[in-house]
Length: 93
Image (cartoon, rainbow, N blue to C red; front, side, top):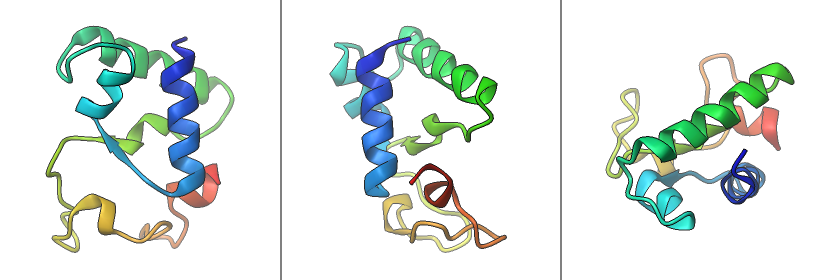
């Protein structure tokens, strides 16, 4: 597993923030659409799933992506704003 990416994802979760594929790829010298970056994120997802934790790579979003419910940029949505009142950040925090 790519430890630099995993560590960054954990830091983002603790800070209740997200990032985009460009920034994440830059950590390991890859372009945002490089399949190697996606493979690294997939490996992290599988690790988290094995340990019964949420898919932390959900914090990596496409630049300019918007929340369909609020029509606000994804970074502007309050942590824990899931339909059930328990969002990702509450799980990871």
